[in-house]
Image (tube, rainbow over the protein chains, first blue to last red):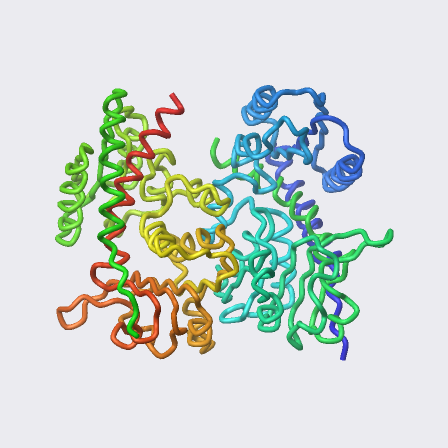
Length: 287
Length: 287
């Protein structure tokens, strides 16, 4: 029996609707959630994302501004710009759009974002909160994957959770979120692949989360029958968008699987906008 | 052939000697490393630790003060006390001694320690740095275990690292430290035990790190022949100190194993004192 297809849109829509209501409530209290995206230099791909951010934010009643700084902005100037946004009480959330020009050390600047405005969850403080099981503004894609898993109704206690990919912003926080629910979590990556161990770890997984960015990396035949498979990869192959999991074969073995496109990726913007509301609340508490 | 016994003292002594030299160098630059331990109420066990801290700190030339606050100190008063230490330029590092009286929420207070003075690595910021692979003031026992593993000369890339215990201050940071070296890391805990899966995870481990606090939890016969076994457990059984690993049997299978006492625990104070120096440097950079 082929797997149940777990689309992202229904849950994302639910989160957005809840967020829209919370925005209304905040406005009644005189708090206007306001998202500022900072972009340095021009970037065609980035325009697609920022247009989409604006549309989604405005649909939920969240004020959105894209601040476009010239490509020759220095790191010091950019840090100063971020610090001014940190100090601006009207600004609830800050996104620093990637990529940045090569003369800027992205992390150095991201880490200057005040953690209460860090709606992408890129600061050490917010990652520490994820590790401590007290996430507040956590990385959006990782949270999206985790909430999709939870939406299936699974009790993670003692389940074998295997995360393939150990990026700071997806794999690691996804692993920590599932660990905090008492899943037995394994993180695989290039080291695992080099040791030839990826297939056997995948074969153990009750819950498999893949975030690498290599099309078809995970063979369908590796997957444990009945597993929940969350594919976070988004790759273009011959003009078609595909994930990191060999979908056609995986769907025959998995119990539940997310499609690409239309799966885990769909959650990211919804979580981002929910984070804007959470950020606005966090700042209000501190005043 | 029985395992090689990996004692903590030789490496701890090396770290202490290096730290002593660094303290001297800092003093020549006019920086005097100064550790303040804050204790609320009296505690017999705590006195053993603080006496030991003082002795070790002073041996390395680090100034040490134990500040004993009355048991009836409120949480607000304690936070104010910590904030005053944060703002005192003479103080390099702060330890908040556990246990605290039950009316105080330990975490609420610990998280107020300025991260540049958080020599126990208990703040979200410092845990986030561990997660991002940029540890600076990381939890001492986890770092001690990691450095013992590294001292064996093992290349962790693609090795199966299994951490049993997922505490915020030992298991999780130990897992993240090994993950950042491209070990394939699995974290086991009570959920794993309930699912009956601990033995099979232990059996896969090239590197096994155990930090639970249950004597003899890990049976010797589970251990993979030739594995590196780091036992962080310290338990008293019939007046004798034992670890979490069934040592007598484990020593027959492991390649390298730490004893209890005299193993991983021995590293903690050395790392703590090295952290005081690191903290002093971090603050000097910021001035």
